[in-house]
Every structure is written in structure tokens, then in C-alpha cells.
Length: 479
Image (cartoon, rainbow, N blue to C red):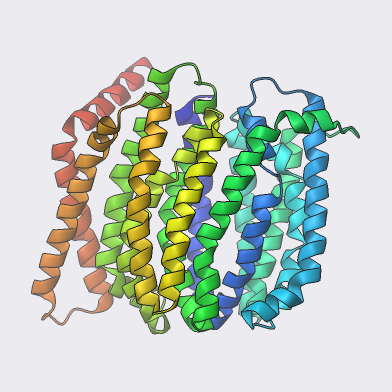
């Protein structure tokens, strides 16, 4: 059940999923227009909303509970299944209303098709939670890798045959079907026809606060898509959606690997603050070493990156990434706090802080919607700065840690990333007059950034690195 064993398997799964997402992003951006990407972004607004309600926070409750009965598992399973069926019916029935709201007729069909995944995902929520509770991430990794690869292959075939946005819809449904079958097989748990209201009530306080958090977090994170879809054109939404997906990559993949592995471990360390703080700060240090150089580096090469990988039709994405990069750095750390609050059963604090976060973010989007997409993104950055410090302070304090120690953990990697960025900008100003193509310029800047950052972080974090190499050497000798 070790944290690093969890990380190993979740990392494997995410590496394959990331590769599939990157490959898919490149292929689909060549075959689909910004407008078609915008339609799928609107469809995903509905999908993400359903994901908030599909298990009412019961999956996290199953992982967090010390004692878990079969009666509780059965009761939660049938509650989730009922919710999934109900959400399918509602989404199918309201697809026309949603399409009218966004003034996009194509949404009627995309929502009806993607709704098929709702009851499928709900029916497998307990099985996935049981696997994660027991830290059987090797099994979940196999399922997710297979589902990602097969869904991508089939979606690419469809898009190359002219299926348009429906290739993305098919990919979403296929991933749900394939992964659900795999989780059922590996879990080996079969529900019995049993439902007790008392079981549901026993997790109500935990799950109700979590649902409230997820509900608020959904509108906070998706209000930008809704407001941009209403205030600006579908093409601008498509540009923003691609930039936002690039920004989310470190959060959804690198940070997700760590937080998904962290939650079951912290849940078992509720009575050991010292160990909990140690594990959590190791996660934060890992994020601080990886994410800042990745995102700041992406910002300074955004023009060449977008031109080489996605093509000239996505030029707006480059300017958006410059402002979204620091947001990604802050969110990569803030996104770990949910695991901390849930592991201590303090979903009440999670709910309250989410209300604060939502007011800031939604307020930024509403005000920005009256002006331009550029102003909206800049206000989004300001709101994230105001969110970062209280979120991290509460998370560190609840497990008995010091906020000053947290700042010390992230200080050296941040300084290294900032110096790397400054050097790349300085060099860029000198080589601008040379006739370098976008591809050569991109490779040169990436190589320079890796070299500079590695040198600086090796000097500033030499104690950490020497301890790591020493532990690896000891393990190899023991082995």
C-alpha cells in the first residue's frame, strides 16, 4: 500500500494516457476546425457536470472509511446506478434546451450520444473505489491504459473518415465502456440486491460536503467555458479550450498521479501527523521541481510550439498560454489540498474554501466577459493568486505542518525556474535576427532551458539529490 508503489503504477497509466491525449490533440487539431473543438468543449461542460453528481461523493467515502461493510457497498452501488440512469434521462431530454442556450444546434446530437456513458460510469464507481482503497493501482493502470489506447485508435479512424466532432464523442463513450468492463473484472466484487437507507445516511455528512464542493468547483472551473461560449464566438472558445487543455496537462496528469496516490495513504495516516506532513511535503516538492519549469518554459516557446505542433490556425493559443502558465503552477499545488481535507474527514472546510475560490474565479470570468478574452484570462490569473495562499495555508495546518516550511519547500525550485525563463528570454532577444525556422528555434530553446534548469536546481537542491542517489545506491546494494 506504499505511496511510491502507488505513484509507480498511476504514473505508468498517466504516461500512456498523456501520450494518447497528446497524439489525439495533434491529430484532431489537424482534422477538426476550432468551431468543432468548441462544440465538443460545450458538450464536455455537460459531461463534467454529470461527473459531479454521478456518485454523490460516495466513492471518496468508501476509500476514507476505516471499516467497510458489504451492505454499504451494495447500497452505494444501487444509489449510484439510479443516479446514472436519472442523469442520462435528464441530459437526453434537455439536450435541445442546452443547444438553444449556447445557440449551437449540433449540441443536441452530441449530448444525446455522450449521455450513454453516464449510467455506465455510475455503475462502476464502487468497483474503482474498492481498487483504489486497497491501493491496487497496478490493476487500474492496466484497465485505463487499454481503454485509452483502444478509444483513441477508434476515434482517429472515425475522424479520418470525416466523422468530425462525433469522433471525439465516440472516444468518450468507448473509454467509459472499456474501462467499466475492466474495473468490474479486476474488482471481483459483485453487488447483491440489497439497499439500506441507514448505510447511505452513515456517509451523508462526508459525501454531502464533498458533493457541495464538487458542485461549486464545477461551476467555478466551467464558468469560463460557459461565459466565453455566450460572450464570444465558437472559434474563440475553441482557441481558449485548446490553450486551457494544454495548461491543464500538468494538473490532470503529473499532479493527478501524485494526488490520486496520496489520498488513500493520507487516509491511513490520520493519527500520524509527522508522517503525513513528510509525505505531503515530498509531493509538493516533486510538483515544485517539475511543474514551474515545464509551464514557464512552455510560455516562452509558446509561439513556436503552437505553430509547429498545431498549425497556423491556432495562433491565439500562443498568447493565451503566456498568462495561463503561472495559473497552472498555482493550481498544480492547490489541487493537492482536496486529498488532505478529505483524508481528515474535513470536507466541511473543503466546501467553505471552494465557495471562496468560486467567488474569485467566477467573478473574474463575468467581468472579463464584458471586455475581451485577453482581459478575462488576466483576471483569471489574479483570482488564482488570491486563492493560492489561503488554500495552501489551511491544507498544511490541518495536518500539523508549518506554512513557512511549505514556502521553503517550493522556494528553490521556483527560483531555478524563474532564472531559466529569464535566460531563455534573453537568448531569444539575441537570436531573433538569425534566420532560424520555428522548429529549430523551438528545439534550441527547449534544449537550453533543460540545460540551464538542470544546472541551477542541481546546485540549489544538492542535498535532496544526494540523499536520493544515496538511497537508490543502498537499495541496489541490498537488492
